[in-house]
Image (cartoon, rainbow, N blue to C red; front, side, top):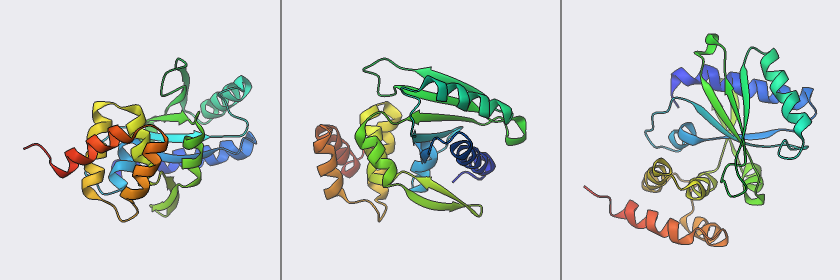
Length: 200
């Protein structure tokens, strides 16, 4: 975990917990992205913080909640902007946050879960301690599936490195089965082969 991002991560964690209570939205969230990859044993530099989130109600359909959450964050000295994707976009709805200068103006992207398996992944998240605070992080198998689904070059590299690092929580057999169900089996097999035979 990058120490310079720890204060921002803890503050974001507090803000989302407070928003969940104040807005009565039952927000669940877990760390994804570079910090999550690093937490599972991969040396990975990153400049921002990424979360996967779900809530009841969900801002995917409740535009009033979008407005309320934006207002809440702005009351707490953050910049907040909703960004929407197309129907075939792997990211349908994203909340971009910039923390105030006190936290280095660190940016955060909160991706709202729009698929059932993403919502289920949040249920399997793992709690880790960061500077005496507890933060949820996506299980390594679910994190790999998220990155397989996104399919970008950095995602591909992260997957290979996570497979090579092989954290003890990671079951390749279970990951294969989950990837097969999501029609991501071929993409996973390619990453597994490349992790076993890295290019020099």
